[in-house]
Image 1 (tube, rainbow, N blue to C red):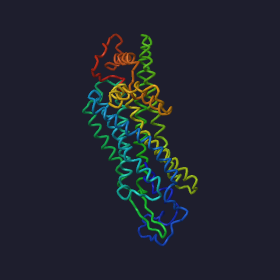
Image 2 (cartoon, rainbow, N blue to C red; image 1 turned 60 degrees about the horizontal axis):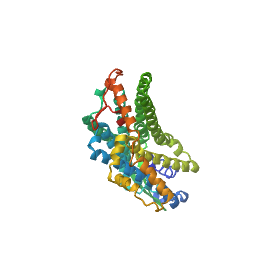
Image 3 (tube, one colour; image 1 turned 120 degrees about the horizontal axis):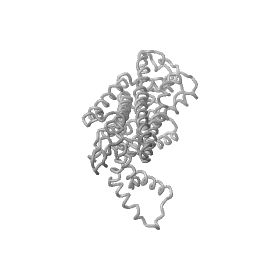
Image 4 (cartoon, one colour; image 1 turned 90 degrees about the vertical axis):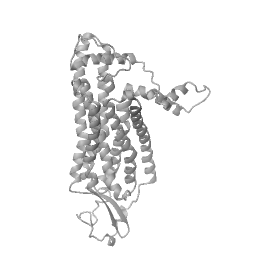
Length: 420
């Protein structure tokens, strides 16, 4: 979240001028005082603005398109409307709103010394970003638990369509309620100095500093704990199954365990890497802000920007982690009109037409990873799912029960591939 959501702008308002240490400065006549000239910077250099905008544009474009496609595929494709996918669609909606609204407000606050979003922006800025991020991370936790029930727990514990709708409602309700203090305990203020008009968004110093620890617990530590518990249980279950399978010599299923382990490892590592910097800065913020050395404060601005950028990057790459790594989503994506056009035109380009090497490599990467997938390992994947379904049926290892291959187009509620 933007730095204005922490305390008053820590780089401007803690320098010790009158009013900083006053609980109520409404009676103080700032018009008789000069705002320190060396602390007036109005906005960051234009070069820095351009660099930061350029770093955000790819993340925004990629994230908005990716999350929109996930939602569209689930809405338009009836076969994808499973309970788990509804949760993923809800997470994609929260991420889409995060990327659509919050980066603009964050960059405005980062670019300018004064708070330009006004009274309404002061109330809504932190609240909206907090609500969206909390909602997304709660849905992520539900997906982790659903994967646990798909592999480890009895099938009766699986999430139903009605249960998914209830979960969606309560994740939004929880996100709004938990983020509400960011709207209640923030106030837009203006100080008219003799030589400068100062505008800022002030937090309640008695409540919000403690609240931030609650916020990072909900946004980072709680979902991380759920993910570790669920994925450790999943890996343990697959490890036990591997030992039994080795005795029966099913190499396809054994190799699938490695694929699952790699996927779970990537999910956890990405979450930690992209969320942990923000958590560390929130914990260390008060100590850093209280320091009077300008070099330390300048470093804090840079690291705060990076931590926010990583949070938005997390919202942008979630469609890849929870959507495009799923074969069902990738097959549905292949049927999109744009992807079909890409496939049809791929081999129709005249040989004599020369293309820019960089653009050609980009198109080839997009085509390989997102469009026109040939699924050379479809048969192996179907056998892996069949073996896993046989192994985990009724939450046991029924070694003597032979499970028939699932008919094409049927909906297997316990298909592990859908969840990995």
